[in-house]
Length: 135
Image (cartoon, rainbow, N blue to C red; front, side, top):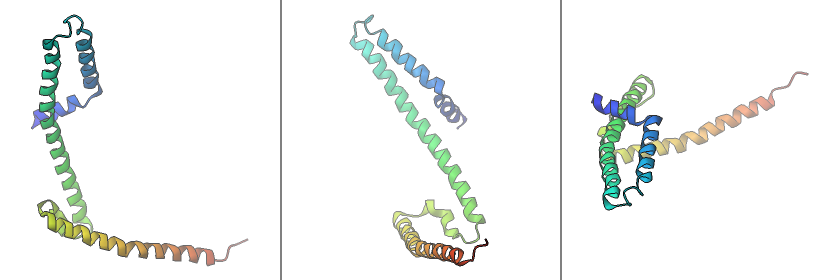
């Protein structure tokens, strides 16, 4: 696990990008020296294929770690929020139909809450305009 984290940190740095660009420039410049041969093309094709294949796993590892970390943080926020529904702590174990039902519940809540919020805002604005101003 630590190796994947190390690779992720190294490959995500600007210097790594610059090294990759430099390697491509060297490869491109050497084309005339090798007569743009099949072997010359095979070098870059093979290298990029191998690097891409390996980076898929590094990226997936990083995403998994980030997702797990976010889940823990959100779970803690749900846990300490008085009005939160604790069922939300286990969303990652729900099947698609359960998630869809929950999503529909939240859409319904939003439709009910937004008009109430707008009405409260309108009343506050009205009460402010009804207050006499001092001169």
